[in-house]
Image (spheres, rainbow, N blue to C red):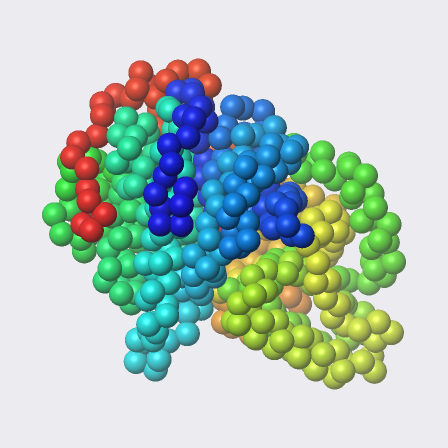
Length: 518
Ligand code: F6P
């Protein structure tokens, strides 16, 4: 696939009619160019941690993006060879995307704009307007549109047939429509892992952007979200498109090419059996040894990527308020934060990281007299086992995100918590509904409310914690990550590896195609 999205036809052997084809920006393997060669390492993101174990043993092709520096352009064969050597049982297909295009698509549009918009953390002028400079507008066409086109072209060049396409997340909103042009008989599902904005929020984006996002998604047969309110927000957005009608009862959208797109909620979850296996691994044994000295008193833990949407600074300030108000807790309760480095090349993340460390330092200095160890300790590291062991042993898990599609950390905690612990969760996280009656809900903007919820969680008797935890754990056992995937395939009427898509579908091939400029 050339930088302009033109495809040199290659062997179309990637997927047989019974196989699933997954597309996401980040796949289970990360590809990076170093010392004149393509290298790989396992990638960890909420998406891959959830999805990879579910499809590991099935015949699945997984397309993902590989940022390609200019000096690597002549080495495409090496990229495919690196994918084969990666050791994954999946057919992982890296799509080379020129570094400049990738930075514009992933860094600028997907992370600086879409991620922030969808998590209510986009900086705007006092009148609410967005100052999207010329460079950012260019990033949409030369980055976001181009990268989506390149992924579509790579799939079209190598896939002969598939049981279904499963397209993931806000990086690839345009892909379903592009795939529909080539594969009008293969069912397509797009799943958004993060919150979907209301019509008025989405329409703060330039007209071309938001129209293409909606039309791109409507190329799918099923558009999936975490919770019903996200699905309803999408329907509300679609109501503003011309010649498109929305049925709110059926939760469908009739498109201009006479297809009826189903809009559904599939709450993401964890795989408790897989998690329990991880908790018995040598990696967690090592992490238990590493953290053994830490459980000398009541402990609050948080586990998330270092990201403004996760609201870590407010969480630390709430802890400070708690220590201010509750002398009995001073010197006893500690806060361990396991923060995964994320998107470190972006200014907004770097600025947030700086203010986070300044906040931690100020709090630690303020209460130093009462403590032997600093009251807050930050582990700035991507160490899944260490984080899981911390969740296993903590008294309180805090997840006070400004907004969150689901927050799978809260579900992981419910499976692994041993103490038992208590959960303080943002009412604006998708998980808050399933955690109702089990967790203590907080508004992410309410510092005092978060401080008192932390205090209440620390004061909870072990009996009350156990009742609440069991309630939440049962809900998770009854809707696992496997149910999440199965529900999507059922909605598509697909049984991967068994029956070709065309034989399964009741509604026949799609109708007219929609042009990219629609
Ligand atoms: O939550 C949606 C998601 O795609 C997760 O998979 C992941 O945690 C994050 O967003 C993406 O992170 P990154 O930018 O590091 O791929």
